[in-house]
Image 1: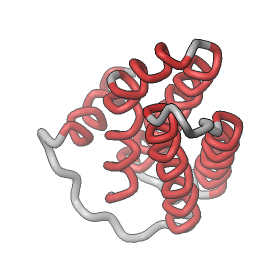
Image 2: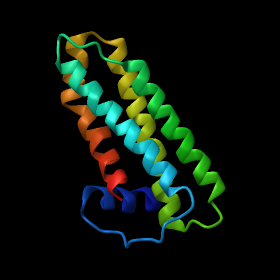
Image 3: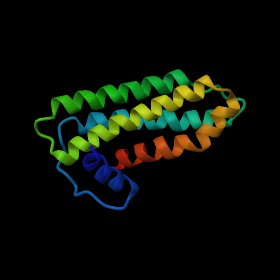
Length: 137
């Protein structure tokens, strides 16, 4: 299992680059779902920082769930044509989306001060940066 996730993690951290692969079926749908989830999370972070705004935790969770379903569906539909790198990328993307959803649930369960601390720290590192890298890829 570490052989699958370590190269993908290295690629995400910028230590290595993956060759540009030919577009696969479902890539456009995944990018669209990821863009919506990332935008929703960025707005959530802004709303948590602003005392006058009301954070939309449910909306962010809905976008993350939609992205997770899209990734899982496209992974199943395209599993025969994906190589090892693409399969590992899809698996890592699914894990990243789960970590993001868990973070949003943690923010919703805690108070505003806890949510602000989490949004300014761990959420950016564990969620927003990897989603940005996936969206660019």
